[in-house]
Length: 354
Ligand code: MN
Ligand code: MN
Image (tube, rainbow, N blue to C red; front, side, top):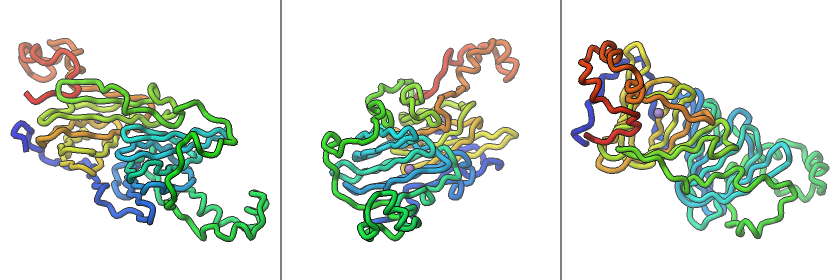
């Protein structure tokens, strides 16, 4: 551990546990892949965001389904998936999404995810409702299994006998062959949404650089379909600090892709909690609570963040103090004006080790 890291403040109570080890959860395992989730059931503080870590074997399909109470946003960690969205205007959007890129399914819209690559695909899903459950989605096989065969036969224009092979219940993930290239798939009978409607080439977006790290933010400005979820990838150098700040408009959820860090959350009335994070862990910070992140290891920290708003907002400590009159800040904190003068003039955002 780096000697520049501040000692953990005492955990004075009043802040519930805000860490969950998603990667080491048991999850739901099938022959085609698995899903692990963190919802308000696993992490009670996380009332308005839920997350899933999923892996699909090549060709495997996370079946046709929808979610009644949450929009979905996904980030591909490794491999490649093909996502297809179907909207109420009877339009579709189909995209291959490689590692580092993102996709979005608005609340209630039909969608499906298939591994369209030749190696296993791993991806992170974020939902804008903590009470969502990945294991209680509206799955097409579950629905058809609970619909009389004569209704299905009439709806689909086929004899009942031809539907004998339908699954008896939800398949969730089904193994299958790797699909042909997008250009060679069956032409859509539905109208196509504009290119890249349900996917965004996030890996090609240049990050903002700060003294101690970088951040790339994909809000609805960059990815219009994702109107209720903003995503970001942040890197923090060894010893660097993502400065104390808060988000006025959204709760924050992140998954640790690499590195080790320490997170402290301040909940007012003297309440604060610090916890340690490693790869595979999830952190949740409720809207409005103060927090900061410190890289406690010798390697770069890499995080996948999500906020439950299509607009990104943050207020950082250094910029706030710099924007107020020197004499007022000196009086507020009982500090000499010369000390206040030496504070950074703008926002630190990610401060380098000093
Ligand atoms: Mn889904
Ligand atoms: Mn934050």
